[in-house]
Length: 288
Image (tube, rainbow, N blue to C red; front, side):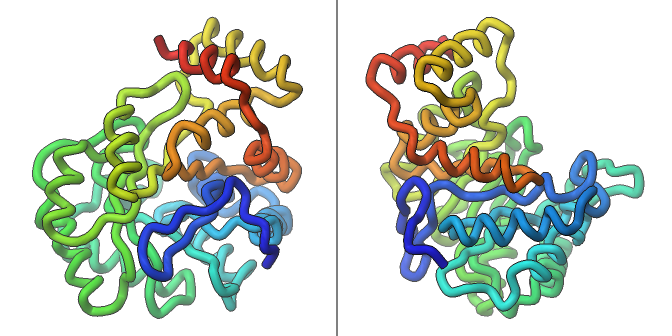
């Protein structure tokens, strides 16, 4: 692996240092993250190129496909290079019609962990996130039973570290009383900043914050404003949005996904995009 790590690194625990620019594998599956990849060879090349470019943080789940993305990661990268960390999620299953179904019973969560282990070809998972809310919002209510089930597997040595996905600050507090939390994955980008306080809290607590959808939810006016700043910087809107996220917090770990090697290289290049203060001020105002 290259010694260059896009966006620098963040150390979250002993033996867990991630490149701040990660890679989200969801788009390697078919439409709606269902079915096999459209181009198998390109999907393999994307994964191998990500590692070659210094990405040490790959986000996945067995409900992408389902199973086909994890199997693809195993095919492309196993035996996994030292320093590469695969972060997976449990808490949902897929219907035959590509629907998403919450699957949060403690015994089902444990079964999902074992399925991830099998399909990734691992004896222990580096990080497992409990998916509480949907991709577009946070859940509510107690997560003690669900997170406790994963904490049991951590004690048994099947999981090294635990995280959360689609959660509130109160749920993070509840989880931290059960076991250490190293990552939070929630919807967050230039246009959707409801989790500003949670981003700040994660930075203070040394928790990685992996934002969903770096370009999602923009109005036409907001898109025009982003395009204007990006053009002035000589970058794409996607690169500019990713660069803004990286400067937003020292523990921000974007995981943009793509099924194209060329697009992957464009995303990684965002880690080298320096945003002047006037550009940051303009971008900060987009959500106002």
